[in-house]
Length: 335
Image 1 (cartoon, rainbow, N blue to C red):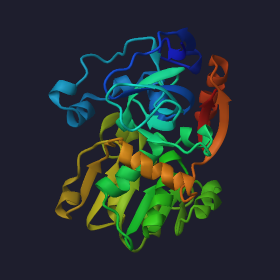
Image 2: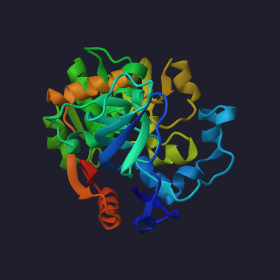
Image 3: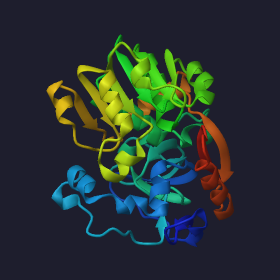
Image 4: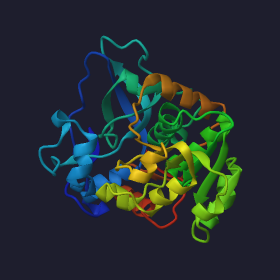
């Protein structure tokens, strides 16, 4: 089968088309022919090598001893891609949820930029034939991250006030919609040019971070802060950046700061009972099925910027667009 693989760390041109054997399935695995995928921030960090250069203090905190990497390199060539949308072609002997011919979406640790992938049935959800693969190909990573952040970790309730950083981004625009559907009062920080977009998603209060300091604008404390923008300094060092430090100022005593990167709490936040949670998503069939239902009912919309074909040259262009300033919407790869 054909696949697009990372041949060395660096620029998008290091992605090349290679031939690989079609994966064999066993047990509860499903063989899916991949018709669409997307680009996630993790793909870029792996491609550039940044993912393998995380500071030791971050790795030590988030992984147990047995899970820690033994080196800072990864075997190459490496097929990138986490999100998949496609058709089931074969099922293992223990599969009960799917049959050949089913349309599905799901999330895999890597390897989505392939013609076929073997994936456990619990990491998939059935997709109605009426939904185009392009609609769901960009959904798995961002939706499960937003869903688990707000509900599994943040326990967001109707009537609560939530501040979502990066409300126009991939995870952020999903989080805004989910929080509003829950009945929360949603405040979000965005570049001013994206204000109308997040307003269309239901945001109650919009702060242009290029013009205003949210810590001064928000006068009534919030119950929950979700950093969907992901402070880059925090990711690289494990040390709270300005965004995190200012977020503590607008949180209620006993409130919660949610982040997809981990860092230590300051002493003053501990004194105030503020909790910080490092969000680890646990993709599963049940939650993905709820997400597909929301997409099918149009209560959750995935913003799409542009679709590119599954060729090395097109993927170069896709990555370059994805890394351009103020890019909005998901970048989809489709066969």
